[in-house]
Image (tube, rainbow, N blue to C red; front, side, top):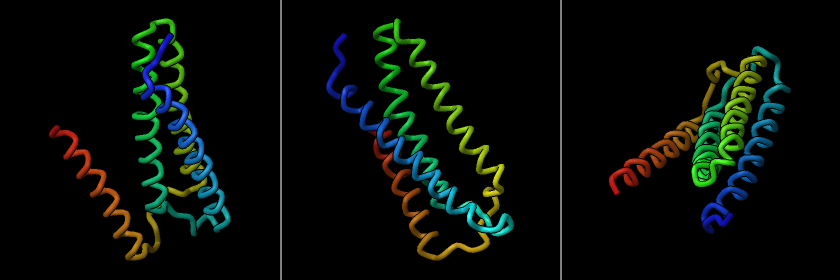
Length: 134
């Protein structure tokens, strides 16, 4: 079976990036666990990382695999398995954040943190709006 160059390059790159982000998430959680339970909090950066991971998983893994699976129905079960696995992985990450009490609103946030968080969200929303209006 032949796949387009886009699918051949998108899937491996996205999968590797998703792995790096997953490792970064655990590094961040491990760092947060060095604090006493009452001092742990959900940093805005963790939220951005999770959103980025979901977007990368959907647009870089799920959608390319979907296009492959619907071209070759023999791969449909594999595609569905990967989708379910990604849901379980994100559920696992969120469950661990809850288990360790990291979902508390931050006791403090810095001005640069708020500005960069807002700027990132605005950039993403602006690009979504731009690309939606072909």
